[in-house]
Image (cartoon, rainbow, N blue to C red; front, side):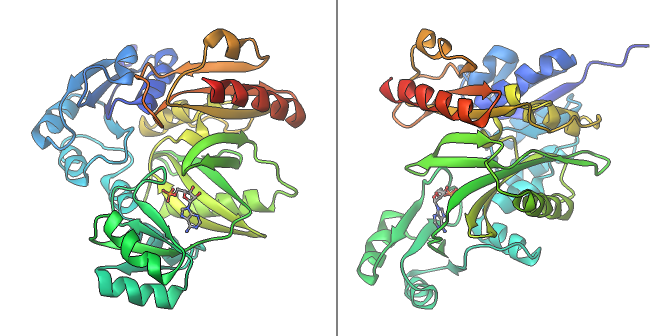
Length: 369
Ligand code: AMP
C-alpha cells in the first residue's frame, strides 16, 4: 500500500518557508504555513493559515493533524512551540529555539561545549554595563539579549563616552556586551541531523555582510587546508548532539587566524545555505524535510562552485540577471522595502575564478536595482 502523504506544518511563511515548500513538491510532501499575513511569501507553495505566532490556541490547532511541525522563523515564541509539541512532534525541539533566542544562553552553551566564543558579559542594568565595559575593555559590541538578527539590536561601543548613548538607543533592559572581534572573515557551517542521529555537514560558506546583513555567501569557502572544515564540523556536531537536534541548523562563525569563534546559532534553514538549491547534491531545504520526517539524509557535498547574492530592498530586472551564465533567480514575491531580503541570485560555475567573475557581474546588477 502506498504510504500516506506527509503534511509538514511550518510556523512562519516567509521566504524560507517558500523554499521549504518548493523542495517538498518532488518529495510528495505537502506544506502548510502559519503566518500573520495572508500574502506571506510561502502562499505560492501551500495553504497559509492567518494568525499571530503568539496565538497559542491557533498554533496548536494548526499543528494538530500534521505529520510534523517545524519553523522557518526563529522568532516563534518558545511557549507556542512547547504547546504545539504536547500534541505532535515539533522538530527541531523547542529547546533549540529557546536557546538561540537568548544571546546569553546561546553563547554559554557554546562555551560549555568547549567552542570558542567572543569574550562576553551579560548586562542587567546600566551599572552592570559600566562594569562589563571595564572588564572586557573597549571597543566592544552591545547587543540586546533577545530578538536580535541581521545586525539589528546592536551597537559598537568605541569609548566610555559612547556607553550611555548605546544603552539608551537599544532601549535599556537586559543586554550582552561582547568583545569586538577583529576577524579575518565570517564563515557559516550548516549541518543536518536525522531522527536516528545521523548527520551530514555542508562545506563551509564564506559570508560577506553589508551593514550587518548578509550580502554574498560563497560556497565552498576558499580554504587553504581542510582543517577549518573539520573544526567547523566538530562545532556543529557538538551542538546537534547537545540539543538532540533534528533538522538543519547553521552556526555563524568568525575566523581569526587559525581559530573559529561561534557568533550565533540559527535553529533552522539559513540564508547562508541558499546556494545549496543549485549548488549541492541535496539542498538544505530538502535535507531539513528529510530529517524532520525521519527519512534518510542526502549528501551535502557541493557540485562545483557557487555563490548566493542577496537582493535587498528591490529586485533587479530578471532579464539582466538571467543573461549571466550560471545565474539562477529566486524572487520571494515580497514588496520592495529598504533593506528587506526580497530575493537572491545563485551563481554556479565550474571553477572558483568563473564563480567570482559572475558574482562581480551579478553584484553590480543587484546593486544598481
Ligand atoms: P549578529 O546579529 O550577532 O549575527 O551580528 C551581525 C553582524 O555583526 C555579524 O555578522 C558581524 O559582522 C557583526 N558582529 C556581531 N558580533 C560581533 C562581534 N562580537 N565582533 C565583531 N563583529 C560582530
